[in-house]
Image (cartoon, rainbow, N blue to C red):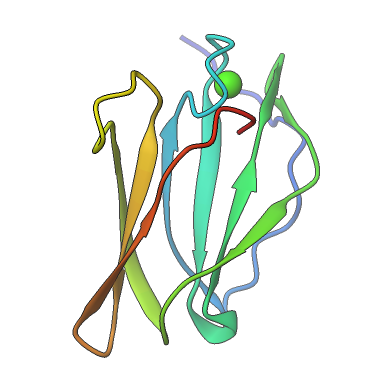
Length: 99
Ligand SMILES: [Ca+2]
């Protein structure tokens, strides 16, 4: 197996804290969610195929998010996100179906 560079926005070491991959948009192309601890947001990047990703879509979380996990929390067959925030809170982002 040989890995080559894909195209992706550059990470921000001071702010980005964690990332996961899952197919949020349901198109069978893996997408990415990146925790932006310094901004108290997450960025969702939809996979375009071929290792390329679209522009980040920003979602607000609680203060200083540190971790993220993807699962279908409300059993609607769409991948939702749960974000762990530093201040002992969780932010649940339910997938509305448009990524
Ligand atoms: Ca996808």
